[in-house]
Image 1 (cartoon, rainbow, N blue to C red):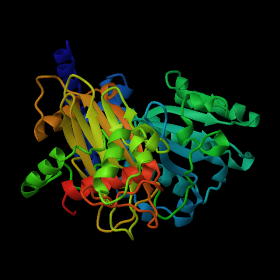
Image 2: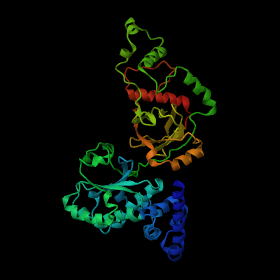
Image 3: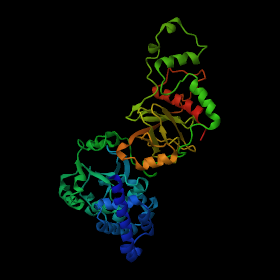
Image 4: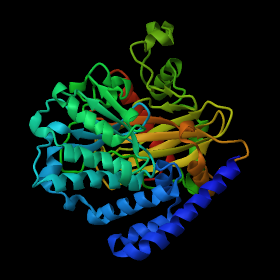
Amino acid sequence: MAENHAQNKAKLISETRRRFEAEYVTDKSEKYDPRDVERLQQDDNWVESYLCWRHNAVDETLKMLDESFQWRKEFSVNDLSESSIPRWLLEIGGIYLHGYDKEANKLFWIRVKYHIKDQKTILDRKKLIAFWLERYAKRENGKPLTVMFDLSETGLNSIDMDFVRFIINCFKVYYPKYLSKIVIYDMPWIMNAAFKIVKSWLGPEAVSLLKFTTKNEVQEYVSVEYLPPHMGGTDPFKYSYPPLVDDDFQTPLCENGPITSEDETSSKEDIESDGKETLETISNEEQTALLKKTNPSEPTSKADENEKPDSKIKAFKKPLSVFKGPLLHISPAEELYFGSSESGEKKTLIVLTNVTKNIVAFKVRTTAPEKYRVKPSNSNCDPGASVDIVVSPHGGLTVSAQDRFLIMAAEMEQSSGTGPAELTQFWKEVPRNKVVEHRLRCHTIESNKPNTLTLKDNAFNMSDKTSEDLYLQFATSRCETYCSPP
């Protein structure tokens, strides 16, 4: 059954390419960008996206391709860049990508109150829409978006039906399959008639994608983590430019680099066998024992000797938080703690533990791929095993609280190989609903806090450290031991 489906899809793609070349390119070659024509012949997913939107009707698909390709050349879509957009338009913050809905679809924000109907600027605004969509499509081929039409504080001057129709056409014709839904927030009653027209533009099949919401309803689609305060959310994000606001997760530097080099293997084994003071297993009793071990010269009173370990450090939380997912337990649960640039110790760890009976493949992606080295960033974890992922800023770049990391995980079949080629193929084929994702924020510890620890030194004083400080100390210690400087 699956084989027949694949064969039929291949035939449709082949027919679409052949007929578009013969029936359209021959007569209209000057109306298309040659790069789009070439991509059509090479990118199966691109052809399939048009076919799916037209229910595999090749005739309708060809008309859609013709309209889309002419528009792409007219707007010079392949050449759009930041410099193509007036700076003032980028500074306003009316259109940008940020955050995710509850289905893990990227949010495409359109803050309507910043839009003033003006024929002199409408083309630039349309180019800004095209710039963001093309930028996203090149990075996340085929992954849908959720459009957030924020109509709060909107007046009549902001109603521009030509602009709205252009946005609708982008998803109906120019970027098929990219629309998850359109969330309309806080629509004034005066716009009811206007959005009846919008429904007609969408068509009967797509009209169900319109979601009209208020502050009480918007959380059905987007969690408070990615909603601004005026929508009842807790997202601290504030738009500013420059730099370009863009938190798309991408592959970081040093993909698949080893945690240790060959000449460091023995050192790693020594540490692992010496006391087993690891991030995953530090308990209250072990912390107390470690205190005594690393401070042998410190006098101990009889009261201290008779005191139970639990009560001795009961004021302190365990140094590590854990997110317990269905496939992996991930430490830390929410935030990665980095040392400050003054301290010189900026590495940190992500610890993954496989809680399934199968091999779990994982990938690490980040919103700032040029800033971080991640070792390993694309690998697998055996059943019941743990993997340490070393994360370090690259080239002296500064850690930002807006930076995010994404852990992607999926179970592999017993017969699947785990080499680089097999993993690459696995991620191409694994269904999206089988991938579990977890996000981590970044946090920098101020330089005036102690932030280094060597387990063999005798400078382990816990009296004034929070759980986050302790986590940073242990993470730094393991990084010093397990990895060489980037």
